[in-house]
Image (cartoon, rainbow, N blue to C red):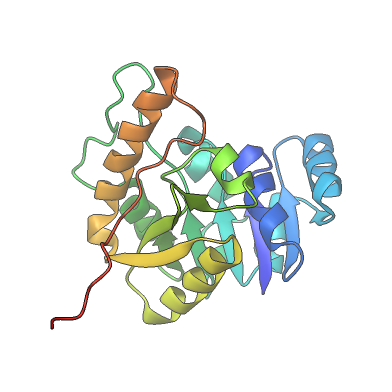
Length: 215
């Protein structure tokens, strides 16, 4: 796949680093020099936000949640994302109250989808810290890490599930984007634990006990 990143921080590097061997990636950021260094460190290309958006069949929004709409505009606005799968990895969470900050009853993902009506917007990769996505072994207490996602487009489902498997995790669809706010609220739980001093590999994992045959 061709993947463009809007943002060049830790999450962009971690995910792009996992995908670099199998996908064609361009990373962008507000600081072009920083984006170039990040891209070089994992062996992928760098460019401007419009270049990253134009490059990607998949575009990952990897900015701070406060900056996501400005970043969309800098990349070229809604037209630049038309026909693409857009992955929202952001969490609108206050690090003072550890509550979600959206006050209109919608998730950030739904707001992004409203801003980008020509794109297929997906929520994924938001429920764990950078260190988790950098981990070469995505097994936690002997179980694979489950990555929940939401989507309103079956074609986008196939794309995001392939990318989740490519980082070494197991994809599980939580539902349509109407349920994305639940993933953001779940991330707030993890963020609160991290700020309380828990290990950076702290995760909420979906565990389904093995189904044993009836005798």
